[in-house]
Image (tube, helix red, strand yellow):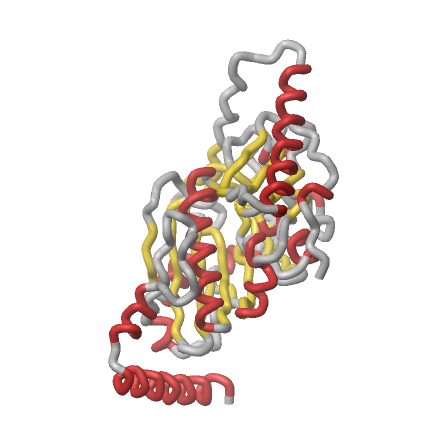
Amino acid sequence: MTRPEPGDAPALKPFADESEVRRIGDLTIENRTDQVSLYGSLDLTRDQSGLRHARALKRIVEAIVHALETQTDLPEAIAAPEPPERTKNPFT
Amino acid sequence: MPDVVNGKLLAKARPLCFSGFAVLHSGVTRTPLYAAEHLTRARIEAARQLERADSFHEEARLPPDERADLSDYARSGYDRGHMAPAGDMPDPAAMADSFTLANIVPQNPDDNRNLWEAVESAVRGLALRSGEVHVITGPLFEGDDLRSLKGRVLVPTRIYKAVYDVKRAQAGAYLAENAPGWAWRVVSIAELNALAGLDLFPSLPASVKQTAMALPEPRRDGGRGQAAGTDRESRRSDRMGPLEAALNRALGRFVRDLLEGRLFR
């Protein structure tokens, strides 16, 4: 099996969609329109794979910084999440 | 595949097969009611090799009015929580399929990223050590009033992961709140069935359903540094003398053969 490298994946466009996901090691990067979520963990090892992972992470973080720096009217804080609605339980 | 006991769950329920897992999707909740997987040692070893570049997507096989849209989850404060986890998927096709919203529920972010990730990791560890497990993961919708995203996608109150260990012929389930924190417990399949309105593992004998097996503890470090075979149970067998261990293995084989003979004849 060929092992797709995160560095080869199409670039993620931060905040552009609610769909794109990248995984580097055990670190997950999820694109949302109001945030990019990074969670999990990643060892950037002092070897070739560490360098590939570090570059992939750098590329994503740079894209995030660029998107935030070039956004006009960047708010101090995003709006709070929409509170969920109440729905009667259809199964009881 | 589980049987549905609570008839109300059958409204707009559609079974969907994917590469690597199957779900029963509800057009009422716009979530899966369960996702079923067959995990083997080989599959988990393959899954560990995968880096992922994927995308959450609406399920094209479902009628548009029965499925969740990406926009339902936008700015909701909820994570898109996998039922059949991406980390279990052995190849790129299965990995891509796991991001269908037909495999997703609105999950509290802290729960999704910490406790539930640890539960998923613990079950992969069990599959590696035991060799073969059947896993069914799903949401519980409890109480008179539920939360919903945009009045369309229902938010589970709790989430379960039921496990049948084929070699040991034992079963049990993790049960956790869809909320921040580290509250979880193990319940029997019988107890879970009553909560879920399903008959998970309908072919298992009642005695197996009624006795919760000792499932491995979810670890806060996500199992890092937990090499295969260092769970509590194998540590216990490490302390056994060679004769005791041999007897234990022979007894295990005997019970297993007995149960499997009864199960699959």
